[in-house]
Picture 1 (cartoon, helix red, strand yellow):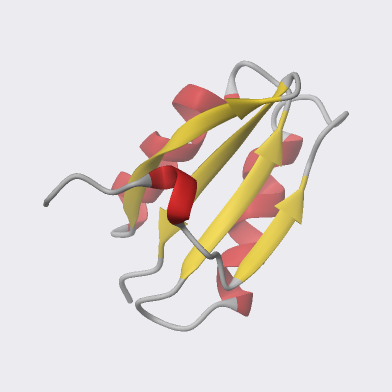
Picture 2 (tube, one colour; picture 1 turned 120 degrees about the vertical axis):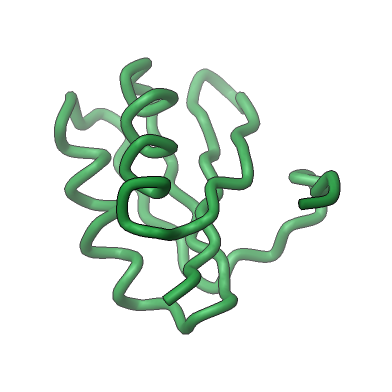
Amino acid sequence: MGEVDLQSIKPASVVDARGVSCPGPLLEAKKGIGNVKVGEILEVLSNDPGSRNDIPAWAKKVGHEYLGYLSVDGADRLFVKRQK
């Protein structure tokens, strides 16, 4: 996997889970991944610090590619590429 410029990612769908505590952002990501096609990217907005661990672990477990996160305005933008 090459380096991905997270700033330039154009997600196919965005799930806004800001203000939702764990496990809410993960549950929103699980629902949201169904709204993107294989090869497309889901962006999850979260200000729950656990999401930085939960989202990558879930993506790996179910076979999607976690691309990374950016911290913007007190929230994280986490990116998951649907693989199947």
